[in-house]
Length: 103
Image (cartoon, rainbow, N blue to C red; front, side, top):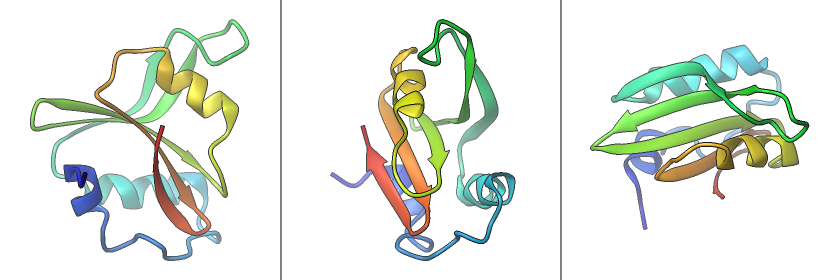
């Protein structure tokens, strides 16, 4: 299945952005998205009983994507945050190299 997110990020997939900061890479992702983008979306749980934030909440075509940005692989904390709210798609995007991982 190819989603809207896959199509919009096709130009950066498998490239290397390890030299980018989290903020720079997040801005690159957000500039590629065509729907409604919310940064630092507050969620009730991050895995340690405290509230957290999802890097990007992306809404397009009636679907909600929760997007966490990690460096090399999906972190446990990212996955917990993504499952703490109702989403259509839960995604971790790594930047070294760029992989779009559906959780």
